[in-house]
Amino acid sequence: MSEEVFIVGAGIHPFGRTPGLSGLQQGVFAVRQALERAGLAWRDIQFAFGGSDAAGNADTMVSELGLTGIPFINVSNGCATGGSAMFGAYNTIKSGEFDLGLAVGFDKHPRGSFSPLPADWGLPDWYGETGLMLTTQFFAMKIQRYMSLYGITAHTLGAVAEKAFANGVLTDHAWRREAVDIDTILHSQMVSDPLTKFMFCSPGEGAVALLLASGRKARELGLPTVRLRAAAVRTRPAGSFEVFSPALDLERGGSPTSVASQAAYDMAGVGPEDIDIAQLQDTEAGAEIMHMAENGFCADGEQAAWIAEGRTRIDGSLPVNTDGGCLACGEPIGASGLRQVYENYMQLIGQAGARQAPGKLRLGYSHVYGAPGVSAVAIVER
Amino acid sequence: MPDTLPVPIADGLICPDADGIALFASRERTTNRLCFPARPEDDPRYDRVVLPRTGRVWSWTVQRFRPKSPPYAGPEAFEPYAVGYVELDGALIVEGRLVDVAFDDLAIGMAMRIVPLPFEMTDGTLRTSFGFAPDKGLGA
Image (cartoon, rainbow over all chains, first blue to last red; front, side):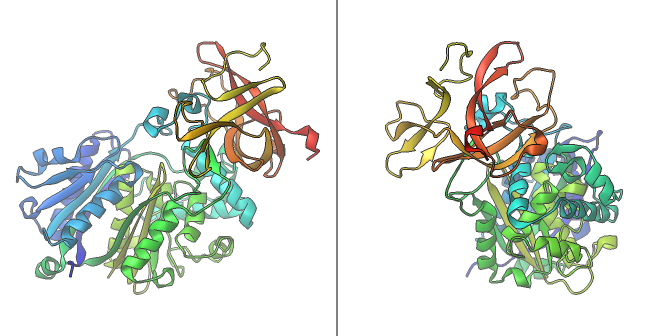
């Protein structure tokens, strides 16, 4: 039988902008914090997986952390870099090969939108030259169609962003820590209709480190732990609608999120009704709304009522993006998916401070999505 | 293609035609699946086909800030433009600029027709790209 896998420690470098530190240095900060909180030393760590999208090679961290000779695997998997690092660490423990390891993700992006090059994505130059290759356009058109099909209104988009900033106020690692009211959100500059400036997250900086251990090691350490019940990474199925698509098939299908979600539920042997808290990819306010349904938490269209009733607030029946998500934390690609798992870990062990969700939290769900159609889902249990 | 139009922005993209333009695509021989942009013409797994010229808006947005260069190669001076996916009759849903329509009038389901779109490159040269304009013929 394969080993059980536990998260036994976590560290974070605050998200936002830190002019004095490189992305790698923020990664080292997060690793040291995770070790310190767990009362462990770098020499205790037997292996590591880590990566960034735009801030260098994770394995060079050993220069600062210590030359202990451990296997350190660099992960480069676009928006799923952090999720893939954890996937690697999870499977390494599960295989029984090692019993204490690290998953780390960090990033540092320049200001403004991402500027991808068509050739890197298997696309012709004209697609970028004529102004069609923007992630913002994709998210706007996905929610635009969804709103038309399922009766979601701009007010619901605004309410999601308002919640994100309200949660950010309570979160010490968040970037945006000021509340923004819904009228300001709805009437701020339109970026890509129907999404305004305050409905989009920004590329940013930050780092997260998670320490993973086998059941035996976790019991020996006696630390507050959560069990990693599922870690699934999936790419797009036929008929999905993804970033950077010059054309779509008439026959519409599922999404990488729906596939990864189902795989994670199957691995964990639980369903969406069992989940107590969720961190969902919210590149923009509409993404959180659509991902509530794609991850199985509600039917298409039910989000308007859910959000109006406050069900996804910290004190609601299914708190969503309790640390303000990407909207309040920004999106350092390599760290973003691990931030979600960090948040679930802190919530489940009851250490989330001012943003702590009330009641007994047993199952936490996290979901990251990115170009060109990849999703990673993790389910943790206290 | 009428000889007054500048050269196409890419090879194998725009199909010359007496009444305007259409788009090339490829049909995979084993599955009949259509794909756009078209594959290289000498790829033996695909047949070159021409997409229908008309369809309906599947989704839309407005690009309200100048995209970063690269990859964007339009003029420095920026005017917002509409972008959408148009469901071409019985074929594929294709992304492109939406032209000759006020932003406030954009709506899912609008009948559209492909039109040539003169595109000014950063260096001032003109190329022919494509866009979709309201199809007055359908009265929608």
